[in-house]
Length: 354
Ligand code: PEP
Ligand code: MG
Image 1 (cartoon, rainbow, N blue to C red):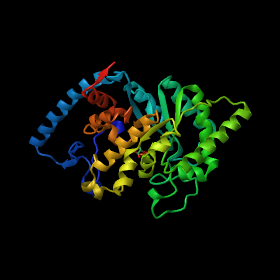
Image 2: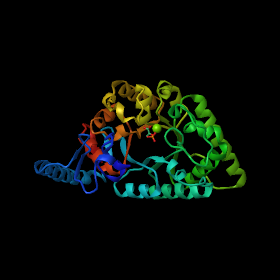
Image 3: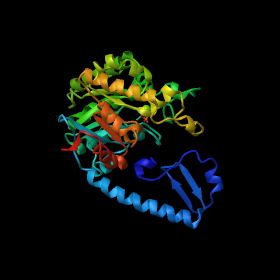
Image 4: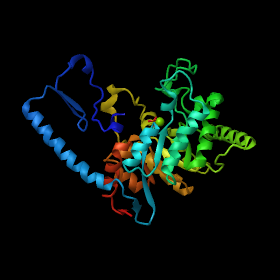
């Protein structure tokens, strides 16, 4: 959220809210990952200079925000946005988003007493699709469970929620939630270039079960004579090691991949993504994960589909050049990082503003 708002943030400052008092000066250095309380004059001066330099760099990035990026051989690279609301989708457009690479639908379902019905969902998805016209809008189906519970849905307490009834698993167990969601998406897909994306796919069976419900919804909409897009592209997030290992066969069954490095990292390296005590063990460019990414992109291209990335790594300045060399087709980042990501991509050999 902090990234999306363009605000510096440092995690894992134990007891900060107890130790820091109202009115106390604190420098939050998001780049170095430290917070300095009651800094002396020299430190304040130093950071003022850092901020000034950063503002200047930001201005040069802003110039890149509207660029259409092309690879040498004439293939477009998209820099899309990760959003959770229609307002964020609007904001992202202003910041130069070439599309939406990840719409986290769960925000529409959280912090309320009852589930949004098909109509309410339809309006949000349709408006987003309309806003982006021919540009792709990838809407991820509900990723509830794990760290995101719903008060109005009976969800038993789990020992290991991240390995539990989460995302597509929860949707497959609750067709009364999943079907109105899919119907709203299929209907909204008639308004623009909307793509449906399933999270946490671990096997062909997960995908087949989800697709069967999509087909059921299409049959219902046809029978009711309700407008929808029968050709709506359907893809998956590659965010579990199982999906990577099966990438070659899964790629033949979907229209696109989007790599979710946040979960792929935690499930591959066995490091809980929300546990600040583990930060010293986290390597944002872990070689095992990089190899999985290279392999997944190659598998997608062999099958003739595109491969994007919507995990945090897509906006990591240290990763962007490597991901571009692997052939990543779409970088989906927080809206505040679109300009910086485009600017960074333009420094990679063979990528130009077309
Ligand atoms: C991911 O896992 O990389 C991802 C983009 O999804 P989320 O962060 O919502 O789990
Ligand atoms: Mg995820």
